[in-house]
Image (tube, rainbow over all chains, first blue to last red; front, side, top):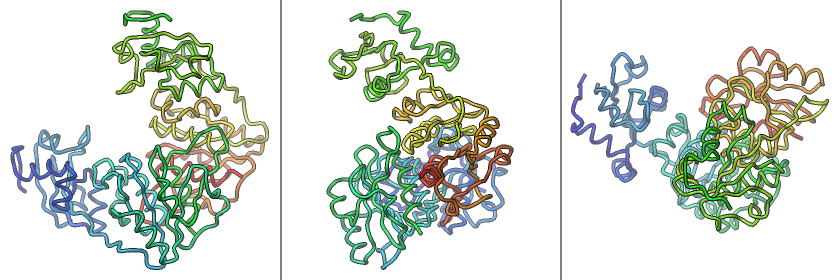
Length: 252
Length: 252
């Protein structure tokens, strides 16, 4: 097993470049850390370029037996490559899943995100979409990069389960409607209470930015806008909580 | 208006003491920051001891007209008192709401938190409980202090709307059951799917720790345990999302 002691090693430098979106997009690769995410990637059949570890004995049987290139590095190099305060000591460079989500085909359940900026929120929404059994998540303009380390961590592995693509939301709304898939916009007040809607065999749910909600321009294109009643004195729900309530309400 | 320029001023020192749970509990006071929270506290009729501001002109009409003691401080003193990276320039010392939640009285909807440690999660759950119109939130042993600044921020003001108390969960479960209020434990797999449960005129929902879930000991005391089906490949839902789905499903 190759052992790296210099931060100038090109493989270490590659990892540090992948901290930046520009290089992730150029190379079609990103970084994951920790046993759980690496095991999830292996199980999902994602191409893993290499795994860095500070201590060989830390490798789980699944990682050890997977046919991946393993390297050991010093603690200080791991600290430099890691994007968390307490590095788990296990880091991998993986290829972006080549998710084909060319468009809805007359059925399916989709989540469309309009300008969701907080990485934790975006990641939790992808995790919730996976839990709800959705067919895809479309990230519209202004939404955080899904291969950002905080998004990845918040997905808890769902980034490898549910297709996540970037897209133009006006086009996606139109595509869904052409296939007779109803598009529901999440709104703060206007529209129908979710209690008036039954479960839907196919749908796209459009949710929006943490502060501003879905852009009015997009809400004007949907089939129906839906809000969650506020029974107490709270002015709104957290956007990831609202997304979870709506997805579990709408899905059959 | 009194102007403070010294960090040794006793009123500044009081604020800094209130960063610690020990002093918050001794004095029955806590700190809130920013216009929205201070206005919410005023509207909720919470007793406000004093408001510090870096710039008098920053005061909203509501705060200006409220009958509260106002002081100006320098930016550097505000930075010392503030618990956020970018202080909003407006900070208040307020009294803990004297929420009487002596017990359920044959009806009501309650959320019981078992060892929820993350302040953002606890705060978001309180906000969700408010939105769902609940009558109270009970924080069991091991749950973060609700007057921690991060909890307060995540509640977005709901800490002033819905009664939040600390309590012994075994006692609360028993109290609810004596009043014929069914207690539902949130479980990862065991129990009934939420889809098999209709809405409930009165209930207590018991949710648990981010990693471990509700302690088995408590799940053994409930009337019924309930899980949310995972339709995709995600291993679990985020605990605040799961709480939101269950509360909006259970409430009438």
